Image (cartoon, rainbow, N blue to C red; front, side):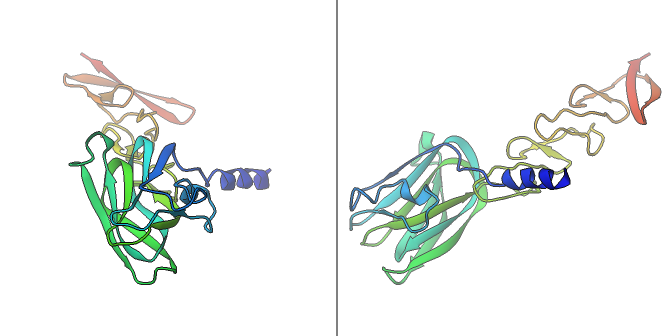
Length: 225
C-alpha cells in the first residue's frame, strides 16, 4: 500500500503548461511553427525568417507570477520580456538580455525575472539581424512562500503562513499555526479572542473563554459579557 501511494505522488509532480496561445513574427517553413517549443520535444524548433525584431510570443489564459524560464535558443542576441496583455506598451518588464555567439549552436539558457511580477504574456525578441530559433520553453512561476516549486507549475504547497493559487495571500494572524487551509485561508482553530472562518474577527469587548477538550482538540469560543 505504501508503494502505491508513493507512485501517485510522483505522477502528480509533473503538470502541463497552463492554458496558452503562441505566435511568432514570421515562419521560415510551415513545419517550424510557434507551437514547437512547447511540444515537449527539444529537437523541434520554432524558426522565423531572417530579419530585425523577429519574435516568439506566448500568452496565458490566466495571470501568472513569472519567476523565470528555461529556454533552448540558437545563437543570436535576444531580449526576454514579460508583459500584461491589457497594456503591453507600458506594463512590461525585461527579464534578461541574452548574447549567444554561434548561430548554429543551441544554447540552454536559464532566465530569471527579478522581481517576479504578475503577467500573462512572455515575449522573446531577436534584437540583431537574423532568424529566431527557439527549441524549448519551460516556465517557472512559483514564489518564495512556496515549499514546492517545479517547472511548468504554480505553487502546490504553501508554508504555514500563506494561502492561495500562488501562495500570495497571508493567513490571518488569528489562526493557530498550521491550521490555515492553503487553498481557502480558512482556519480550523483560532487563537484566543479571535473568531470567524479565517479567524479574522477579534473580540473587542470583554469576553469569557470556555475551553472544551474533544478528541484532544481544544476549541475556543469567544462570548461577549
